[in-house]
Length: 167
Ligand SMILES: CC(C)(COP(=O)(O)OP(=O)(O)OC[C@H]1O[C@@H](n2cnc3c(N)ncnc32)[C@H](O)[C@@H]1OP(=O)(O)O)[C@@H](O)C(=O)NCCC(=O)NCCS
Image (cartoon, rainbow, N blue to C red; front, side, top):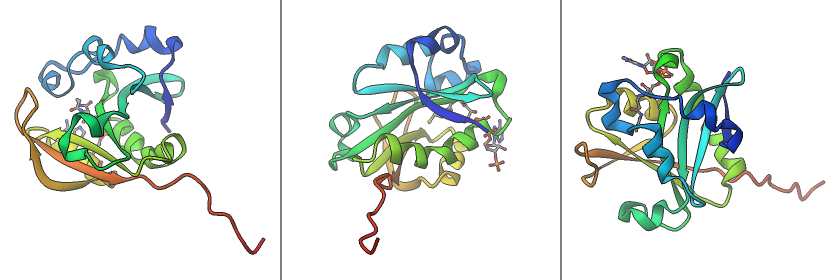
């Protein structure tokens, strides 16, 4: 079963070995380019299976400032989600997407929505996100370098447990 963790400097040597196959590069690019985007607002995460890093994504807490379609307050973005080529087809992406709601409700409880964009030429990823509870907004984002992208959204449940007033 995969787990999600914030990336630390200890993960770096393994993270820089991650890559997708050539025809997928238009969807996420190289890990060097992805890591160049990471900063205090755009936080790198790793997907681990048995202590091995099999995948990666960014959580962008500045997404609502960058993308007009996400301008509702308290929205964050999922970016650069991928499973490294040697680990694809083993169910890890699906496990990670299904683990995401719990992770976000614990790690980002004060954000109400998570957005992503997925290229219209990438139906495998779009189906994956639908299975993970993301909804297609039926609007397209045209700002990407590789053609139009579907805009998808998912609510983040608050991780703050309700207080039982009767207790
Ligand atoms: C999309 C991606 C994350 C899927 O990762 P994965 O670990 O191989 O996916 P899984 O093994 O968890 O499979 C998830 C589903 O996709 C299907 N799938 C995965 N690869 C497939 C392929 N090449 N052809 C057809 N279906 C495929 C699986 O059958 C599975 O379907 P199911 O839920 O009905 O069983 C991976 O291909 C990838 O990293 N692609 C490049 C980067 C990318 O496009 N990221 C998305 C950016 S928005």
